[in-house]
Image (cartoon, rainbow, N blue to C red; front, side):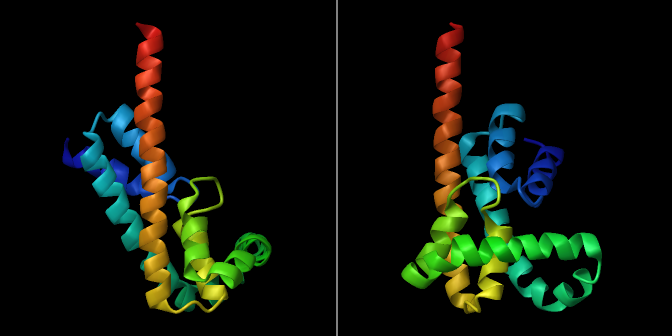
Length: 158
């Protein structure tokens, strides 16, 4: 495992929509990192990413939404927050947000979770709990899929 490998995984983890859903399989299957090293790396990066995005929204959102392209993305994200995430947060609190972050599907994850927490005025401490729990859920699911999928694939090829 080289510094270049680690850097590639960190950068991929930081890309919205990819996050750990892509970087964990990439690290294990392409870069051939040990699963525990890859798991630890992407989990830490994703957890750190949460508060960076959450607190950055306060400073950059008013500037960014003045650009039509980003305003359109923001409006689409707001719609998603209010239709998909808000009902879960209203019902389950930060645990609903944690589940949203933890389901490794496109459009879920730390970036959307941070936006939801910001828009729904979830306190930073509760957001951090949701982030840690959600990232761990997502990482475990992706890890299990990668490890079992690669073993099944190897079994088929033999």
